[in-house]
Structure formats: C-alpha cells, structure tokens
Image (tube, rainbow, N blue to C red; front, side, top):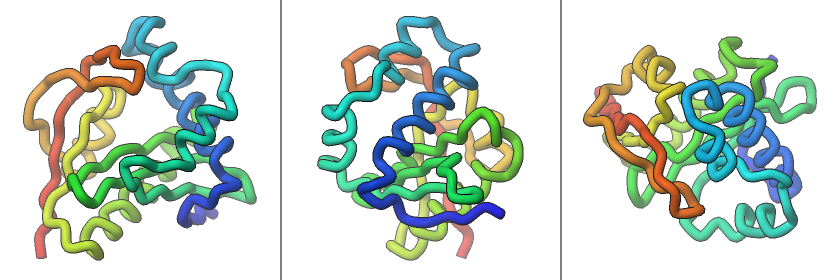
Length: 161
C-alpha cells in the first residue's frame, strides 16, 4: 500500500536518492549525459542534503512510502503555484505512485487556495502529466541548479471548483 506523507528531515538522503534514481534510471533516455549529470550529480553529498534541508524556496515536500521504503517524492511551491517535483524510483514506475503524489500535491495546492498549478515537465514526464489533465503551454528551457539549461515542457492545470 502507498502511504503519502510530509517529508521529514531524516528522509532527506532518501528523497535525493529517489530523485537521482528517477533521473538516471528513467529520464536519462531523453537527455544527454551532460544534462543527466547536472540534473542528478553523484555522489549525494552532505552539502546536497544540507541544501535540501535549508529549503530556500519554501517547498512543501512529500514522500511516497511503500512498506517503510521511500519510493517517490513530490514538492510544491505555494508562492509561485509551482509543482516543483514528482519523481518515482524506477522499480515502482507505472504502478500508481506518481499519480498518488500528484493527487496529494493538488490537494495541498487547493487547500492553500491555488486555482492552477504550473510546472516545467521533463520530456520524459510530459505524457504522464497529460494523462492527469495538465496542458502544454509551450516548449522551453528549464535552468538547473548548476546553471545549465535543459529542454522542458511548460504545463499547467487549473482546478474546477
């Protein structure tokens, strides 16, 4: 059974591990190695964990837990109406974990009074978001933390009340 909950500080390493596994194990087929390395640099360092925990952009972060193991992660930034992250471990891809994370992110968004969510979807994740009702706004570039840009699909979903 999938349990979705708020990320705790002790989940930080697992949060990053899921992100890296998803990028390197799923999205890597759609991006060159230089982008993958910049998007999910290895090894995961204490500095990476400290940056995640410092949370400079005030993300609300959630995790998907299956039998005590974190297998999916999600994040939303309320101030910018941005769905910031939804990643699942390759071992649980296409098993409902991503959809469960998005449902919870959308619930959080609506709870905070947001009427729409926007995101920079990876080329890999565009079909996933389309099936969940997100619409393509334009194709563009997303700037990674390293400053490198990667191709993305700018998408949006507005909620019906």
